[in-house]
Each structure stands twice: as C-alpha cells, then as structure tokens.
Length: 206
Image (cartoon, rainbow, N blue to C red):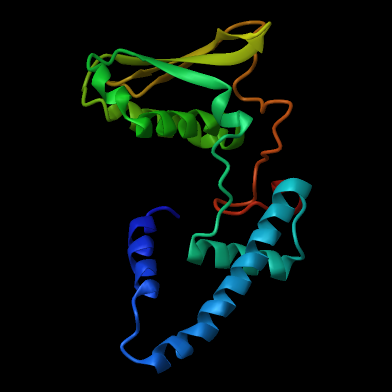
C-alpha cells in the first residue's frame, strides 16, 4: 500500500494549484467530496473490524477491502505494543553502519511481528532478509530481546535466538525456557490475525 505513497503525495499537490479554468475546480468538487465521504466510511469500517474483531456483512466487507486496497486506506498503528515491546540484535554483520537507518528497525519489527500473525511466512522472510547482508556463506543470528518496565527502569531479556545458514538456508529457532514466547501476542494487544493482507476482518468470522 505504501508503494505509491510518493507518487500519491506528488499528485495530491496538484489540488492546490489554481485551475486554468474556474469551471475545472467546480467539476472536481463532486468526485473529491464523494471520495472523502467514502474514505470516512472506510475508516469507520476498518476501526469497527479492528476494535470489535468482527466482520461486516459479506458484501460490505468485500467492498471495504477492495476500496482500501485500491486507495491505500489503512490504519496507522506504529506504536502498538506488538512493535515496541522487543528489539532485535543482529550478530554476524561486520558493518554496523547499516543499523543507523530507522528503516532497518522498521524492517526488523515488521519481520519478527510475523511470528505472531503470519508464522507460516516467517522463515521465508527471514531467509530473504538475511541474504541482504551480501554474504554467500556463514551464519547470521538474531537475538529477540523483550522489553519490560520494572521498578522505574527497563529490563531486556533474551527470549529467543534465530539463526540463518546462508549456504543451506536452514533456519534455527531456540526459545529460552520460561521466557515469553515470541509467537504469542502480548496480553494487552488487540491486534489479531486477519482474513487477508490489507483487511482488518478477523479470520474466524469472515
């Protein structure tokens, strides 16, 4: 959905240019107003899916998902507990400058959130990410550290370790006994598995 974000922003800027003809502005008023109306309805529908964990009637849910996919409509949930209660430390990469980019943190948070909500895709995504380090041999390891606040300070606990063999492609997972399971959503999280990418309708009721 973010693939055309740059182009969309550039195109939206044209709305603030004086039209060559006063009639052109009047012509655009109706479709733009209708789009804003549909967008508002779409957001209400998505919030309903998200908070109630309930689907709309089949026809309306399908229409909502198609409209959202076509227009890039989405809920911005960057600072949910699922994204900020853990960090990933990478071992095996010799160039630490790569991790000065915020995009790297976003990628890692998105990748390891897959453990909770799309576990079948996790290993393939982890292999593909490991290959971006530009190595053809060796092992890239990822330490999953949970973050918890205890007595006015933050505590970091090693929950699990994941390793990718860049030759064989084998993925190894080792979860520490007694630690939080990274495959189980946080108890306070309202994020849930959805019926399809881009939809907020829950799997069990759609």
